[in-house]
Length: 323
Image (cartoon, rainbow, N blue to C red; front, side):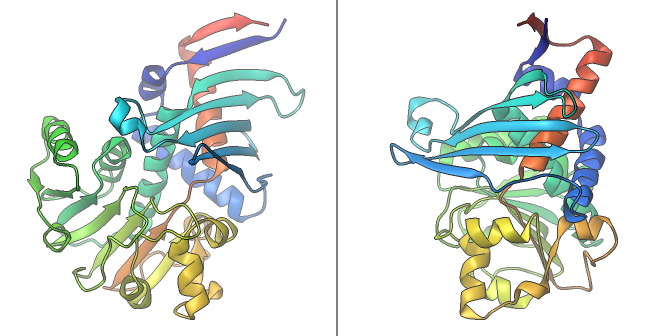
């Protein structure tokens, strides 16, 4: 008999706290950049006009993870999550399935952890605000994880949806943050030392003319080749650009592909987060603009799933089913 553990989103929240997950995700990025993982490019499908992805990876010490994920923007109007996913974990030696997990929460947790890793190595030391553009589901996890390494004097937020800002403001204030709702993009950047873009935009919302260095910019949106969240000026004036994967961002986001084609940047100028963690590349060089651009990697899912499985067994959490 094969025993599989099923983990709900609330159980993943309980298991994968920032103080545990961030260091593990950093280790996974290091293994990836050292070529020690097996991570084929994701399979992308467009179904009924919506993005679907199949992501798979083997990460030593964590296992083989496979995720099916979709992004359905119209679900906002249906009162449903825009990101839905299932993650499965397998034993890399004997091939047995080990766990099935709710993938929306796992994705948000591991994405927040990656942003926190970049903040640890790239954020300026000066005091200031944390700016968040896009105040949906992902933004909550970005706030929780990034604030473990950058303690903001206030959180400045901007979203085209007033109801989303109001909901996020209440959430963040309950965590003890001072929150300022902004009515424009120009306003949201004031005194921001860390800027997080967590939107569904296809055109730039990060404008270099509004940034006030020293500042670290994190962009997790604009995940298709034609979409951009960062404008040319931001890219041109960045002292350092770090990505999760050179290969992935070149194929999957206009934020890197388009500036490369324009000759604004060169591929050799771009570092991977795993190289920064390993000390092979510099995170912050001076007092300028640093960028972390992420499209999300399957190594993050495999790492988070493997860690959650290990902790669930130790703490006897989850529903066990025999196949």
